[in-house]
Amino acid sequence: MDEALSLSESHADIAGLSVSLQGVAKIYDSGVAALGPLDLKVRKGEFVALVGPSGCGKSTALRIIAGLSAPTSGQVRVSYHGEAGRPGQGVPGQAIGFVFQEPTLMPWTSVRENVRLPLRLARVPGREADARIDEALQRVGLLDFAKSYPRELSGGMKMRVSLARALVTDPDILLMDEPFAALDEITRFRLNNDLLALWRNLRKTVIFVTHSVFESVYLSQRVVVMTSRPGRIAAEVSVATVEPRGEEFRTSAAYADYCRKVSAALAPSYSGRSAL
Amino acid sequence: MSPNPLSTESGRALRRLRIVLPAIVLALGLAAWELVVRLNNIPPYVLPGPVLVLQTLIGDWTVLSQSLLTTLLTTLEGFIAASVGGIALALLFNQSKLLEYSLFPYAVILQVTPVIAIAPLLLIYLPQQTAVVVCAWIVGFFPVLSNTTLGLNSVDRNLAGLFQLYGASRLQSLRLLKLPSALPYILGGLRISGGLSLIGAVVAEIAAGTAGAGSGLAYRIAESGYRLNIPRMFAALLLLSLAGIVIYGLLALISHLALRRWHESALGKEN
Image 1 (cartoon, rainbow over the protein chains, first blue to last red):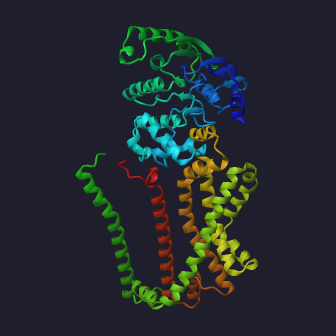
Image 2 (cartoon, rainbow over the protein chains, first blue to last red):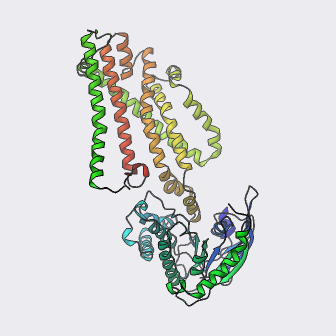
Image 3 (spheres, each protein chain N blue to C red):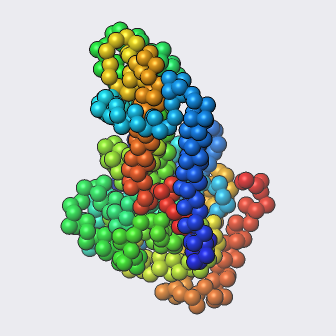
């Protein structure tokens, strides 16, 4: 039921756009207005960060795009596998990869089998699946840990497994819901760099939800700042800088400047009613 | 805690104490029992000493072992019926809320009605062997049902979302997500129901024993009671307890083997 809303129209060609939300709103059964109306257009291959106070509906927006939750009103269009040059590389029907705040791994099976899950559900034949799994694990640098169980890994490594699982179907769109929020800062910086490197290589559309201003500016090409509940767009900040970004960008004046802009856009949220 | 040599040493000593201490208590208790019986010249039909009980156990082994086998077979049949029935019913409930709402109250009623009160009725309507197995099943199935239901409902919400995202079929979700998530709960339920199946079998045998034929251990206890063969009562009781311990131990071992690689309950504290 839920998929129908986003995926039935997914082949509709929306020139150059990967995700398009028009007037999307979500009102929970309890009557709480969680989101919107929200208009958001994300180009193919763009890295967009959604920033906002907790409870502003960022995660809800992501779940709606993924088809995990149905919007109360509005139109969701998701386009994939339309690009010339890479026809049918991805697993059919598995065009969206999702990374949750928690690693969300199956504790009862190995890293390899966890990464295999999306392929297994799509009934990809064994040999092709094995090759894809190796490639995905290689990308996140965990090939040596394929036989480990999730409990034997550190928090950062678990997150990498989660990322590998999202990448294994070669999706066009990667949705990330505060994936590194629970990690320590050192691990987080490393994963930020790794994610940027992955994005440079794969050029997937990434929508990255975070509540960290610094992370959003460091990673994305465009930061979308949301207001507190119900979440709407307060401001958009385009981050234009010399690619590839690295540690020197993190310490540059331009970076601080962008962070200041995003923080300023967020400011009304601090002064408003607390979301807690 | 870091595993420095001192703490592993004391850990091993502690583990040894956990075996040695109950053994000492057992030995002291048995010695006191034997002593009281001998010093007071208590006749065996009032209270036999542990030595006599052991002698009876060996002397009556042919009769008792036959009975033990009968009771164990009943327990096993009841346990298998309870496990299969409990898990299957929980799976059905999980697939259909309507079915759950319609039937769950009756599962509860069956559970709260004392089986010893149901047994005589069952013995009227069913052949004796079937009635005994049904009793073992009634007592054993509820823990499996309720634990499996709990387990199936405790699936990680995000993992369930992931399965939805990747378009998993109902069967795939069940096989790859719900059953593995529920496994620790199911095994916990089985551990309880193993012991309960034995109790159900014994209760039914006692009820059946008074009605006539029967050859299980519980029947031996009842029969020996009528004949004032108190040492044999004790011997049969001893066998019943040992059977219960072995059943529990086996199920605990299976549970440990199935979960040791991933579940908190089966991991050492050091991890």
